[in-house]
Length: 143
Image (tube, rainbow, N blue to C red; front, side):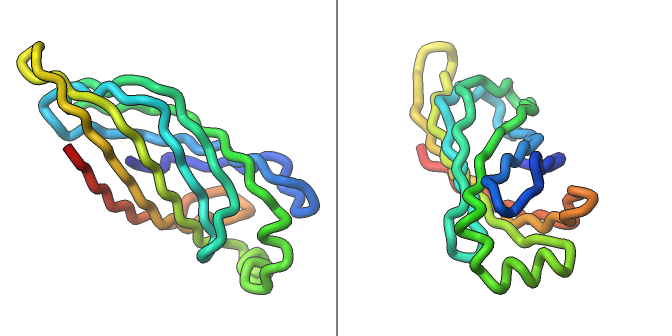
């Protein structure tokens, strides 16, 4: 999973923020992966500040699916945090995301296996340009 870009809509800290993330999901496996709706949580430090639900879909064998995910961020959980205000003053934010998705792979056209995937990412975003400065992701998969 890779965060291609992020767009903050209505960047006003007195209201809830809307974040639109352009995300690519890569399937490194030799089988297509058909998945259910995904859940992504957004954390600032240890506080959950947002949640998003992605639509179901399918990624082909060794393919990549690009999609937009819209997340509402609860500003009131951030504004009272002195570290958050310090980071805003510096012009960049360190965020964490956690995405969980379940789905199925079909082997030889007849055997279906349930698969769960969890992806965790640390992302640094420059606020003014909304540019991704750095990101590191790890993935776990359960059959």
